[in-house]
Image 1 (cartoon, one colour):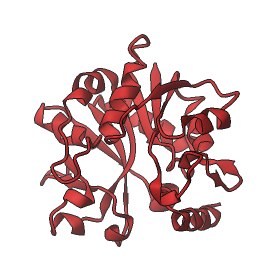
Image 2 (image 1 turned 90 degrees about the horizontal axis):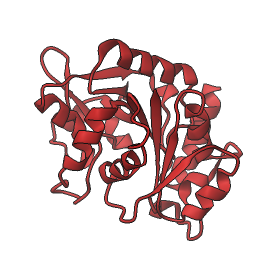
Image 3 (image 1 turned 120 degrees about the vertical axis):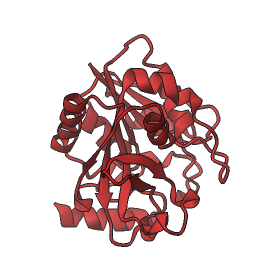
Length: 247
């Protein structure tokens, strides 16, 4: 059994919306959050949507969809958001949990997610994560994938926390994961705050898994199949332009 969590609690300050959560912003004529729910709905059950800011706008957009809502009362990072989401799954006890962002799931195909799940099942790691390459990583400001000399993933570092050398890395964390449920349940509450931002980062689990002797697998996907998330009106324009080129 595979469950899923979609993160949609953020305030979305750069979208400058005072009434609606940014994940309900129309993307190619459809609220962004619907792309994520439709991507996961035939692959996983249940789907937990973690809400917070302007949560009613999300519930209104998802009327007719079979989802469970979990509320993140204090928006203190993706790690805390997933902690809230995993608590909603305690009565289900799935084998694995997909985790994605409500503003960054428009480009993925079901085939990509099915391949991610298959890789996870075949290798039995703590985490299987989608990665991608981008020649100008600073432009995206995504987390960098850190590998050892054996090309094994040992960490994922946010750009804000990255060293000068780490920021040169072009393999990026696309922020879509398949976790072993028991690992996620046991470790998500142990994430420590970033000393730079004071937030709890979900990608902290990568290093935590490796430190605990568990495997982390990367599933590298071409950038055009990942696209960019939407944090601002300019992101929305650029993302839709990239989407049109993809299709």
